[in-house]
Image (cartoon, rainbow, N blue to C red):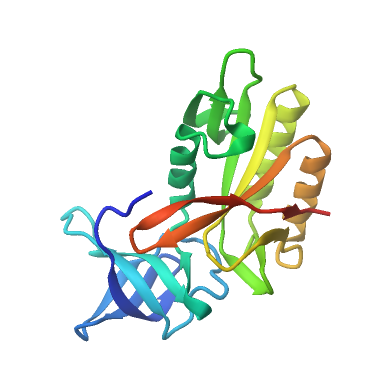
Length: 235
């Protein structure tokens, strides 16, 4: 996934009201950028950090900048936009870059299923069971090289696990794919202390036959691409 426009550098002043961030541009101007992230953003919204914004001149948009990346210690980067992983996965599915799903020639996004739910992707192919695929953005890291999910309570995420469990019980494939949108992690675990309900739902879903996958990402100022598979640790 390539960013629509070249990113510009800024310094983060503060993130607030979930979807807003005040930054200082390199020319000294203070502006407000859109922050497409409803989570707690623990560790990826530190004031004073170098961030990268995508500018736009669309008169229909209230803000002229969208916050895309933040620089981390050690030269690493993290992606901020939680919509990016779905775009990354769509490109990866088309290019057969997710080995466990590479046999599927066709996929559709945002397909209605269950009660008031939409699955991120429905994969299909001749002689193959339909595969219900949910994608989650991950950018929490608190200890060592562990990526963790979620970074705040997510009732919606727990519901997705229940829906996937039902699909697995009906004989379909059901997959939860965690996309780690930061470059300094090598494995994934659940942040059970932040959302014990989600952790319990994930453990139950795994027992019900839901496949738990995780992939790293390659991130630079040009865009975000699928990376190698990472181990998933779910009790």
